[in-house]
Amino acid sequence: MTKLRHLVWMVTAVIGLMLSTSQGFAQSPDADEPGRVPDAGYQLDPEWQKQVVYYRTTEAPGTIIISTAERHLYLVQGNGRALRYGIGVGREGFQWQGLLNISRKAEWPDWVPPPEMIARQPYLPRFMAGGPGNPLGARAMYLGTTVYRIHGTNQPDTIGTAISSGCFRLVNADVMDLYDRVPVGTKVIVRQKPQL
Image (cartoon, rainbow, N blue to C red):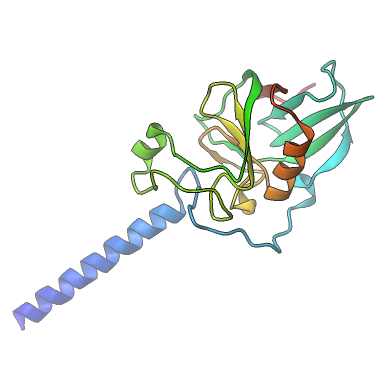
């Protein structure tokens, strides 16, 4: 009877550990779920859907302006207009601002989490080939020599949130659209505060 009780206790402990680990994974602060394939029928809130908007700026057409506070990425069109995309941004402590250029572009990029992310989330894979279940989604545009990217996502429900480790994510349809519109060398301005 004591052996049976001990066995039941061990099985219960193992199941509890497995559940806590899986819940921690699902609620990870980076919210990257390797292997998750996005729901093709997911509908973005109208606030986050791509649209042409009035946008005052002195920046040249083709410039990307990211407003982390607004959770929007603007592609300047000229004549006071811009294409506006809903984005997911870095969570508190992982937001930044600056001026960079797109240094490289990739279709269905492979994902290699940086060492800092592995240190925070040791359960992440060290490499994941590009594809629908890859957290970088359908396209990636690399920003300068940093670890940051504008990329797709396999979690469209994170658009409009502050949840990443500093990258900017768009739904796959939007990141493919943006990717086709901007060349390597495109100027990218990242602002934390909204434009007045």
